Picture 1: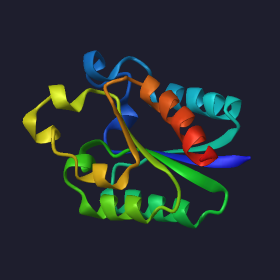
Picture 2 (picture 1 turned 120 degrees about the vertical axis):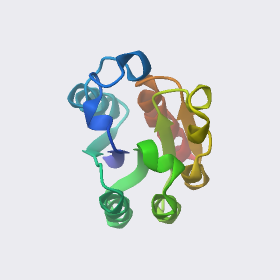
Picture 3 (picture 1 turned 90 degrees about the horizontal axis):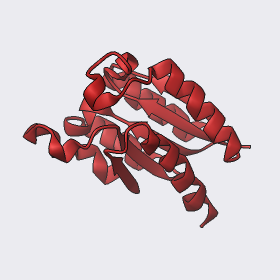
Length: 147
């Protein structure tokens, strides 16, 4: 079974509590469980990490790059999307498909969120679909790996 590393960035541990009008009411723990089930149904094992520290996120991406059982990366870099060249570089170095997910529609939010440095490291970007963006990302990964 092929694996997908799913990495969530800063403040996403507070899903379900933080700004539910923007991020919904599903907790990070519930999201992890849903993704494991959805991934299994699609034929993937899922590893899920939530990381608040930029260097640890880079390290997690690099570790996923070296892990032969990980075929794809789904990442929500959170606020690092707008600020981190280091996360971008790690995403670019990942050897398989990378799908970037944002729960909110970032282009309807504050202007500083409109610029996404990390977008250059992703084959596909999903924004504004809520947690369903992650489910779509799994299906997109399946198609990208099929090609």
